[in-house]
View 1 (cartoon, each protein chain N blue to C red):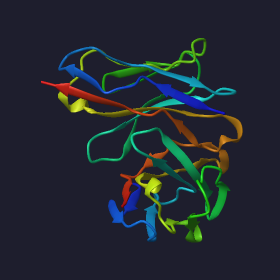
View 2 (view 1 turned 45 degrees about the horizontal axis):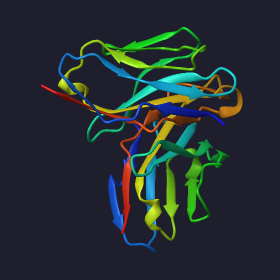
View 3 (view 1 turned 30 degrees about the vertical axis):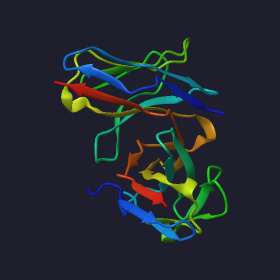
View 4 (view 1 turned 180 degrees about the vertical axis):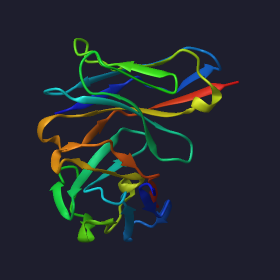
Length: 119
Length: 114
């Protein structure tokens, strides 16, 4: 079974440009999460999808970040325009709801992350 | 809100040394606690977990006990190997309406020398 896959693994862009990160969760996992680790600090929650709907986007830093999850399958995270402080590693994770209850979840499986460098 | 505080690194040990990485947390209710590990060039992997007070999670020789009275979940291993070199993250998942969201500590870099 394929794990969580993220594209690209690395991205270097100039300040002001746009970058789109992609995450393919494990097939059948309704929950999809985005996290970010900046400058060796803690990994911080960005947002949570249940299928195609945003359940919680309280961690999104500002309106330069836009996340979508088309048809409840893969997800994209777009940063437009990118700023220097957006540099970091962006992780995606997915999990399955237990018995259809989104408050009860299996273990979260993480992708390898996308390392974003804004110069 | 929920928070996790991890022992600051980096930690450098010789092979077969004893390892402890401290982790304390603040959370409402009854969180589940986790240790994740990131090996060089790889993604985050779940190392072990505990879902209620006094539970002990264990895997690959690592152990951690959920201590509610001290709000701690310290990671230990009796004899580390070079292959244990990685970044270790302590995390919690709140109960109730957290919907599976994880709160992480800042990570501890472990380097084990032969």
